Each structure stands twice: as structure tokens, then as C-alpha cells.
Length: 362
Image 1: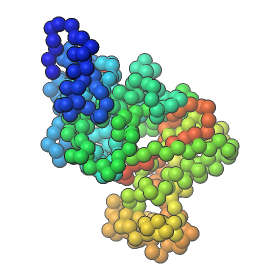
Image 2: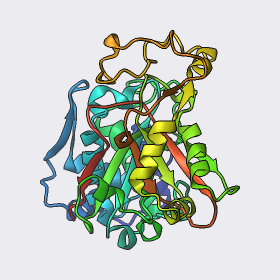
Image 3: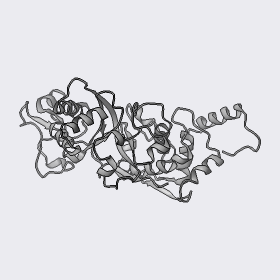
Image 4: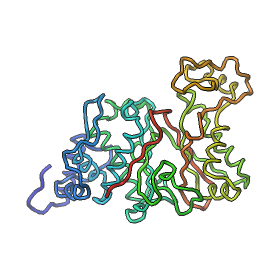
């Protein structure tokens, strides 16, 4: 798209937006026309060359250059100063491993949940508190949307084509939150993942759904965690024997747990031990014969499915856990400290490594 030398009228702007629709560049919502002067302002916020390729998706033989990322960030409505976060978000998403394994194209219809940590949150306007999964905050909405536009435009993964999602979920439009580090009683996710305190990062977790746990009825920490574990182990989310799960704990729940002496690791261990369903419930839901549903077998990898026995011999009342180890419970604190509400983030299963992460380089 070229810039006109004369002043643009409102009708020119409407025509430019419609041209973006006609070119297939949108996610179904209007985008900001990526005029060169705007895109150049984004490129000023990185020391990468515009022609540098961030990552090539081998199965579709397409890559994303820094300039392409800038164009999509501009169309998403980001501010130029958000661009380093967008670049880190793509790095983190790739780092997790799912894009290379077909996660973006999957029938399960997932997409990356982006989690922003560190000092950049406040000056760039990222929301970590009330309505953290909802609308109203430009940084969250547009950085998450930029990732989706990059997936669609740079890599060509579009609905009814390479994107084979059977139903999808609303988080595929945009899914970006910041951690509420100030009201969390524990270390932030970035530190858990090995970064120094005070370093700004983006982490990415391939996500299929978000499910609320609204528990304001008890002050007992075990009861709160058992309620969360019930959602973590939901049968409908199963695609294989084990899965990684994200738990976005509201500050009120987090502070209650910490008040009773529970660390983040204690929370992860409790959820790993108690998340699952009985063998009888699995059989009743038609999951007892699934090749992906297996009895716990010490020393056997979750990927080594052929060598794991099924649940035929497991008693109906015995729990079949759905989380392999505490390390596969990703704990983040976010939201407002005004009610006992937390959220479970269901994932597709296991990529080649743990949750992806990247440092934001401004």
C-alpha cells in the first residue's frame, strides 16, 4: 500500500480499511491500514534488520520477517513501542514448540496465551488486574491480536484453509495477559522459568480454552485447590493420557493459599496429585479404550504410549491422574483481588519442551 501525497479524507480511510478486507489481511475485524510511515515507526523500536527472518515454518515453507511482523503489529492496532513485545511473543510461541508440530493448524483450535512479566508492564499499559482476560486494554488486546495476524498473514494459517479448527475458541482473536506481580505472594512466572528478577519477558502457552473457578465459599486452602483440580482434570479436555495445564490464580485465592503457608511449588504438587478422574468416570465417558488414556507406569515417558498398559485393570474408584509432574502445572497470578475467582487454561498436551519464553529487548 502506498501513501498518498495529499491529506487523506475519512472516506479514503474507510476505503483503505475495506481494501485490507478485500486483500484477506484481517481476522474478521477492521485493521489499521499499514502505511509505510507507520510501519517505519515500528521498525525504529528494534535493532533487527527489516529483512531478518524471525522463524520459518517448514511445513508451509513460509517465514516471518521483522518487517512482516511490524506490518501485522501496525494492523492490529499496537503502538510502535509495543513492537519489541510482539517480537518476543513470536519468539516465545516458537520456543514452546507447537507451531512446528502443527499446533496452529490443529482441529482442536488452540492458540498462544501470552503472559507478560517484568517492568515493561506498567509503562506499556499491560493490564494484570481486573478483567485481565477481557476487553478494555490496548496493549493486551493488540499484542495478542498481532500474534494472530502474524499466524494468518505471514504463515498463511487461515480458517477453511491451513487452519483446520473444528470450532476454535474466542482466544484465537487475542489472548494476552500480564502477571499481577504486585499482589502475588510468590515469585513471578519469569523467575520460575529461569530469568532474573526485574527482566521483562513474554511467555507463551498453547491454549484451547479458559474455564473459571468461582469459589468464594471457603477459607480452606485444600478445598480451593481441590476445586481447581476438578477443572484441571476435566475429561472433555483430554487428548492423551497426560497434559500440561495453566492455572491463573486470582490474587484473593493466591493470598489465601500463601497465608496458610503454601508456596507455588506446594500448589503445583497438590494439583498434580489430585487432577484427574476415576477410571470408572473415564469409562463412562467412553475414554477407557482410548489409546491416549493410560495407567500410571513408573519410568515410562508420556510420549512412549505404545509401552503403557491401558486402564482395563484399574478399579472404577481409582484416580487416573492427568498431570504427569508438578512441573507441568504452570502457575500465574493475575486478576483483581476482589473475589475468589481463578481460571484454568487447558492445553493441547505436550510439545517438545515446556512453556515458551523470551526476553523483551527494547
